[in-house]
Amino acid sequence: MTQPKQSRLVSELDTALDAYGRTIFVEEWEDASGKPKVWYQYSKRNVLMKHDRRTAGIIVTRIGKTKYVKT
Image (cartoon, rainbow, N blue to C red; front, side):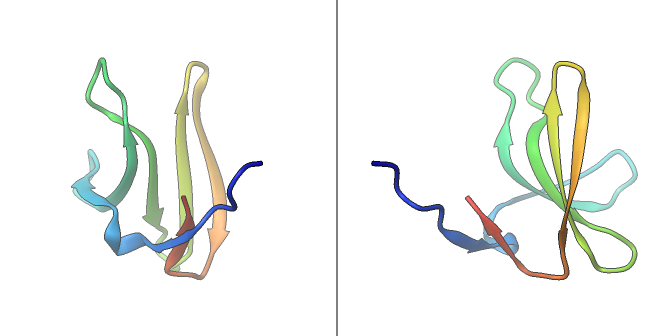
């Protein structure tokens, strides 16, 4: 039986800066390159977006106006 995902505050994740100097909240790092694999970022309209780096590119998912993520 799998355990339910728990909510965490975005601010509890590792913080870093993207290429444009904006704050991102990193959930998982890539081992080989050291780049963020899964990270969150607030848009200019204060909407939380999830970014997921995959082989074919980066998938962006709109989470909404919240401070919590499911990890």
